Image 1 (cartoon, helix red, strand yellow):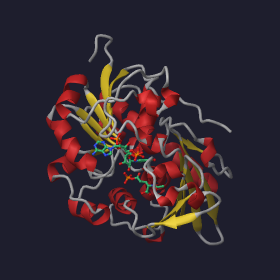
Image 2 (image 1 turned 180 degrees about the vertical axis):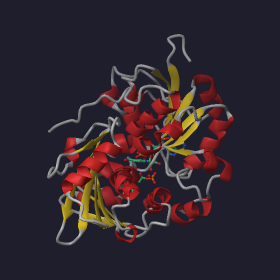
Image 3 (image 1 turned 120 degrees about the vertical axis):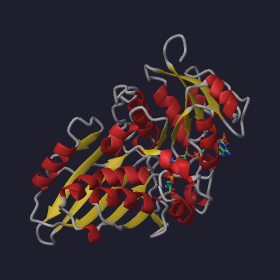
Image 4 (image 1 turned 90 degrees about the vertical axis):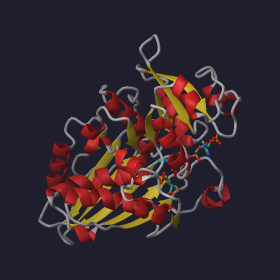
Length: 351
Ligand SMILES: NC(=O)C1=CN([C@@H]2O[C@H](COP(=O)(O)OP(=O)(O)OC[C@H]3O[C@@H](n4cnc5c(N)ncnc54)[C@H](OP(=O)(O)O)[C@@H]3O)[C@@H](O)[C@H]2O)C=CC1
Ligand SMILES: CC(=O)N[C@@H](CCC(=O)OP(=O)(O)O)C(=O)O
């Protein structure tokens, strides 16, 4: 802790979309001071050289990736690093006595062989997979209190799980009937260029990708299986949409009874009572991505269909905030026993 009593915080991957968003949000966190912004490729540069929007907001040069130095300069580290990188770096940070919130997918799956199947990298050692607390705040928030290591959920799983868990827990939907149709803005793919998100490829275009092969499938199934108490599998199709931020997860499931829109609204409002970042819409009101953009909210709406016996659940988040940096800060707040909302009081940017 610094003399001002603030938690000293380092960000690895601070030149990526998740890291830059952590900088933006942490600037107004009353109990955190950013003491190191870290880059593996641009150490020594002033952060505002690459990110002029931060001019006059954070006056720091980028540090290199050095766990011993991080342990001297910080109490907690956010690792906003690609999968495979976190797997190697996080154990070194934990061994150096640091608290860690990891934004990658490397520690979310409890079964290392599942990780290797979906991510195509060697899994971290089992002891770290066991230590990692899966930080889906509104569902497992109490598990975060006092721990040293949080694995922040994926962007698609955050929107999808928050949209499905209350209905699964209540036993209202058929476990073998779940279809998830998910769409993301291009920042979900990170800042590194690729042909897939090239302007001419995505502008005025709509693409599916990784059908039945997406690395978030086992993450979604792992948590739904835990909640249901039996194996749940899902059909999950991802789409890339020509917008910068936002995820919409549209979920279809067969209902086990004649539930109405009002029943769903009441069930979800009861489940999320006291959780400030899930907003359950009124009957007949379906949320859009713009309504959460730039904020930590997840908004959920419902349309039941008595004719087919199915419910459509729509869940939206900002992938960079609730799907990454915002939820990571929410997890830090829960780890530290602070008010869940510290540093996250952003009204969505509209229009
Ligand atoms: N974007 C999103 O919406 C979401 C992203 N995530 C996950 O969060 C993590 C970060 O994502 P995002 O910010 O989008 O990705 P980016 O590709 O935008 O940024 C990743 C950053 O990691 C740094 N990096 C690369 N290699 C290394 C290394 N060997 N050691 C240290 N740092 C390295 C790079 O910075 P430099 O070269 O300067 O070191 C780069 O800027 C990923 O695991 C991603 O899957 C999770 C949820 C949502
Ligand atoms: C639009 C887009 O490409 N999104 C990425 C999200 C990746 C991500 O967040 O990866 P982890 O959660 O596994 O770390 C994807 O679908 O792979």
